[in-house]
Image (cartoon, helix red, strand yellow):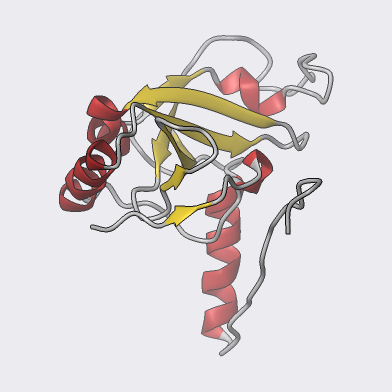
Length: 166
């Protein structure tokens, strides 16, 4: 599977359309392509409900495992505020429990401006790999699916401008 080489995307772009199925072939192909491209670490990111980008770094040799099984992160991170305080929210107000962050092997990109790194958005799943209710990617994907039932095809883009770049 070829990996598109692009300029470094904004880390706040974690809410891309789509969901990740734990496709073993896609995971293995992506890992092989990343290794061939010289990637050592993959920045697996999501944007929390306060708009703050959260990251877990995954060694490239564990990328396929991360796609299949996820990388652990406490549920409480879903209710962090902009200043990293914990909002009071029943079920999410203690550091117990663990969600699974599963990178999307179809959206991973090599970061040209950060040698040895790639970036992948993640889906936030429960321990049994079902989408969490607070996962922005799952919510967006569900909205796109609902629109498709009505014959609509939503389109959108997220980007960032870096000073001095065109």
